[in-house]
Figure 1 (tube, one colour):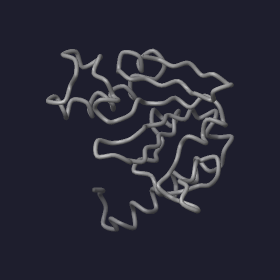
Figure 2 (cartoon, rainbow, N blue to C red):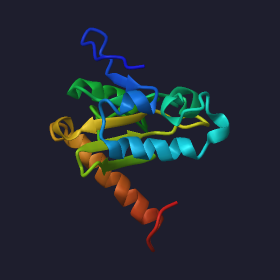
Figure 3 (tube, rainbow, N blue to C red):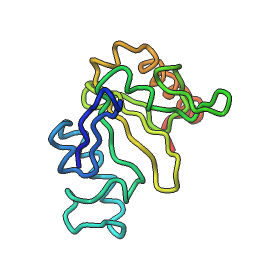
Figure 4 (cartoon, one colour):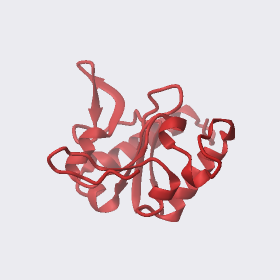
Length: 155
């Protein structure tokens, strides 16, 4: 399933399977999701890995940010007055995933907010470069990871 962006609804593209994701994102992005899905074969809802539902497996589809305004939906685990902060509001290292992927063509963010996972957002470089909070969040996350594991490696 692909939901196209609609300015009136401010809904970005979302992908619920590898098959639909492959039409819009590079093979490297799909390979990373394929590896995640492959770890949980007992939870597949379809015999073909390309058709396994992300929503059923990780509680969310994968999103492709299409406008700067879409960044309001990319929320860290940081809060202000009991509201999670978005990348449009502030930089934050409080993401489970915040990194450049696909030769830095995409910034990828995920804040795990359920027992199965959480939404994963791909932010094209053309949008990321327009909002300083994107690169700053990736830098802050890397600093947090480095301080948590000062002798190298990650959890």
